Image 1 (spheres, rainbow, N blue to C red):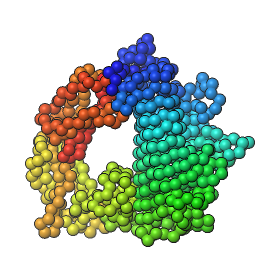
Image 2 (cartoon, helix red, strand yellow):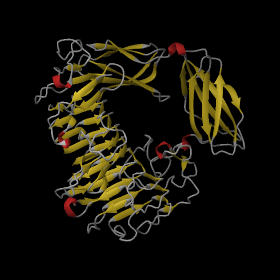
Image 3 (cartoon, helix red, strand yellow):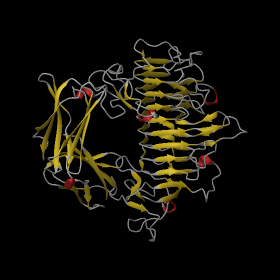
Image 4 (cartoon, rainbow, N blue to C red):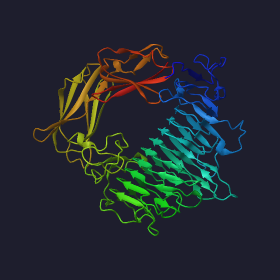
Length: 623
């Protein structure tokens, strides 16, 4: 870590002399220096929230593994909004118009901005974008791009070369074509959420939606993720892609190989097709061992492009084995789409390994013979907890029903968390689909439980699918979570006609700043099981953890209302997510002192977790 790291600030509403300091910040992106290595490892550049900025922002400096250079918001209000300066634009090529550009810059964190073109119509996908990319990196490695909202551009994030980058927790939507020419053949491109042209990158926890545009060459073009060129060992995990012109395309302009790319635990809704793999021609690529594990593929309406008949397509049957391995997936198809082409059958051989997948088909074919481990489901039976409460399948509850055919049928794939962060496997073999069933934590099938504070009372709510319990008991502990006593007995509801049953109890005896509750579920006989512990703080103790002074010098005081450092773990991390300090706490005071004198200047997060209840909170400070 560099002891010379600095904090810089940008605020268009300031009226100072443009020094880049907290009290006298820069006024615009144009004031942020673009010189190579102007910023040093550990430096942070903060942009005032609630403000508008005109780009491009060009970053040509590198941090280090322990001291990245961080670009992020400060203050309160909405995320800073970045737009490309179209009014003073001198760049004729749309693909060169980039809002945030990194050039041979490593160990940089981009966190928490909104990137858009406000002049672009909301719904017209026939017009070409004015701006090419939200974020474009060229030959950059070890960067983190996260928590961005990107809309109405030509592409969301482009990783052009480099490796070991991460794009996570971004919301990318409503994109357009970058090039769309009526007089030049096969040059159209754009409307891609994320473009990957490198190896060992991680694309995770993103929301990618409505990435498509009309095209002279292809009728329509675009898609959630484009894998282009020699790319290997990328991980595409825990994303939600919906209403795009396809989820993923593999191709290249210069040949090469795409090896061992992992696509796991993604929710893919109404994209029309999952893969298009170019194996010959202008964009041909040698693709091997795509690992497609534990995804939910959901199609509830006809594809946007009528020519798309198959969820998985390939330009030519390759001679190499194992182009694609599919395991533990759920295909929930209410349309006539095929899995692969049933006529050409390009995957009915060694090119496709398919095991332990489940298929709910609406009339389409497979294009290959199912493995003995795979099942075609009865279309009248749902695997999932709820698929009827919303017309938007991204809002369905994909947790598995207790008797779901997806439970314990899968294989170990090397991915140890599901879409919702649960450990995999749990209680047996992995489940199929994005959600690992964990309801056996509570043998009486208490599916959820929570509590909250009302004006003069605490309310406890829980949901169960068990109608054969003898009774439930509400237990309460005041002040600490280790002295529970029964305060109420609840008779179970019967013959409700529903697969789940909801309960509520109101406790009017609120006597302590913090009260703990748990639900004791008693079976017929003497067996009893407990829910997780529910923590409720009353209004006098309500509030958030805080750190002062902020910005810090040698020490900070971490404050939390109530006796809130009992049974706690405190973790200090930098903006790259690297843990710098971890400490177990068991103090009755509401304040602790933390030595930060050895930290370089920068931004840091303190996370506080109750290791008995799992409750957590966090706060950020700068130095």
